[in-house]
Length: 113
Length: 114
Image 1 (cartoon, each protein chain N blue to C red):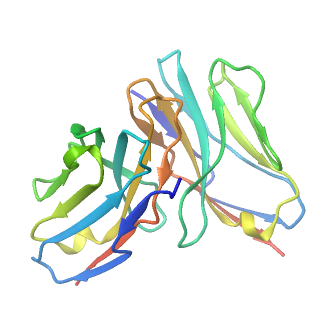
Image 2: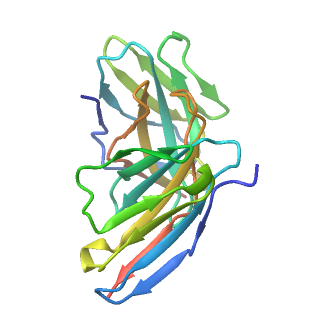
């Protein structure tokens, strides 16, 4: 069975500071992808960043980067230079070859001006 | 890429009525997923299609829920005899048929059952 755990239901960060959101997962598959999605209040869920399990290099997208620790099954998201627009619910998602997506319970991030 | 569109954005209905939602995926995407999301929670899987075939349906989904995707294009989700517990955001997402293809979500349909 596949599981995704986000242990931080809520977090806050000062504007311009850095914050790290945690995610751990479990799967017996060797091929899988990991994603972080952002869902702003009352808005559409959008992709932030993705990581292929076979790639050792951590993915980076502008101010967003991940720390992918495959052996530990950990996939944390680091947001640098936090902006007010980063206030959102963040979901960690596991995708396996079984055509299913497995969601964490989400972390609500508030950026404080 | 015009994105995933869902209609209506909001639906208010009385308990016991039937409702139907529509999702138009990104045209090149052959997979389409339906999720239900309640306030402060993550999306809960309902069902998914590959082209016109419904490949999986959540065991948690009652028989009052049915989904179709005729001709592998748009999809409809119908809820019969709605109950107050059905009040939620219903999300549609589409993707290519590959595990490395990310989901593209629509804006969702917010259902309120009174």
